[in-house]
Amino acid sequence: MENIEQKLISRINENATPLRIMHVCGTHERTISKYAIRDIISEDVQLLSGPGCPVCVTPVEDIDFAIELARSGKVITSFGDMMRVPGTTESLFDARSDGYDIRMVYSIDDAIKIAKDNPTLEIVFFGIGFETTAPSNAAALLRGVPENFSILTSHKLMPPAMEILTRDTNLDGFLAPGHVSTIIGTEPYDPISEKGFPIVVTGFEALDVLLGIAMVQNQLETGRSCVENAYPRCVNVEGNLKARELLYEVFKKTDSKWRGIGMIENSGLALKKEFEQFDAVNVHADIYKRLHEKKASESDNVDGKNGLYEECICAEILTARAQPSQCPLFGRRCSPEAPVGPCMVSLEGTCYNWYKYRHNK
Ligand code: SF4
View 1 (cartoon, rainbow, N blue to C red):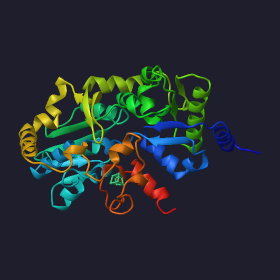
View 2: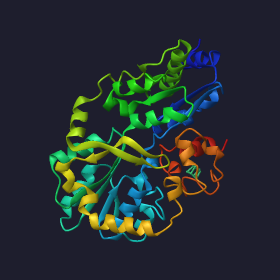
View 3: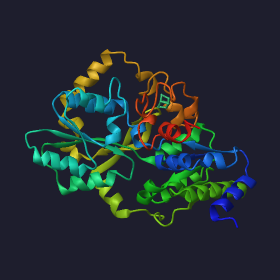
């Protein structure tokens, strides 16, 4: 007797027509790669990676600024995967090897503790991530932080990026990210689905992903495009109101640069005026200015590609125009041990997952 997974696979394959479905979540990529979902469904149904890996889309300018702060004697605190992402000339990890004080933390609270324990040092927390991580950073600032603490804010918002991707990437629908949707709910996707793109909020088990694919397929078969929720055990229509209240008490929407993609209107978060004294760009404005003057006078080799090295095709991968195996460096010069581009660094990176789960096949 067929189990549910087998039934979904049969349903997808028996009804397969050429489809391009994008996910925008690194954990979805991990599930798809780990369970070889691309191999068990029809080749007609293409599963494409979008910009769902937070360290992949963190702009090179922010990494360079964090490194410059460390070189200027500040203590940088960062999540571990962010430390390995290449900046213009080096990563935070490389800078730490040069002796600068760069510490790995698991949360903003770890960074605040370092600041409290070391009142003579200036601590900067590198705040990255989507709608899921920003509320806890907002909550920490509301609880109060010491004067020697600041935050380098590089948070991103997912719906504006999805909207941009509908414009010229020939997509048929989306699997919306389960984690982000627990915070924002399903409503922010309505304007995108109203443009004719089926969207299914999807969880992270293989079964969830198969269900999400089948539901997108079903919408297209029946001529519908709406937002459906295939992850109701965690996501509801309005999301987490308390988390969003905290978020927008501290942050406001702003235009933001995505590595490999460029500027996207209202797709980032900046600290509100009341919290500007904790904004690393304000607190260390002299270092920020000096770095930008230096950059303006140099012609570095990454500016032309939105912060990526010449041969790296992360930009194409993040926008579903290419797959990792099409990169000439994949598995050769670029590997998780020696990443050339940001997509090879994190557990959520598309190149990382393709390397880990497919490279040796
Ligand atoms: Fe960039 Fe490496 Fe991926 Fe190629 S394999 S696209 S160099 S991260």
